[in-house]
Length: 74
Image (cartoon, rainbow, N blue to C red; front, side, top):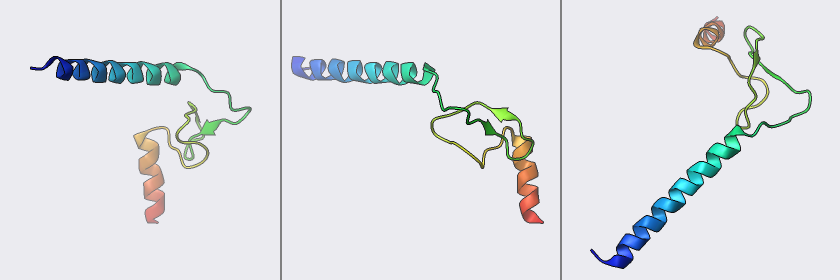
């Protein structure tokens, strides 16, 4: 094996690890979104806020999801 190939592989792995550490650190930082709270659209239970999905259309459990889906059939 050539040294430059090994250096490239080591560099790629270091970059991957650094990106994972950065993502994990960002996910641990709490976000402030004012008084806005997310709630389950079936039972109304307050849910943890996420940066990906916001607002209406969220359910808190598979049971609530089934109840919501059954309501669509009628």
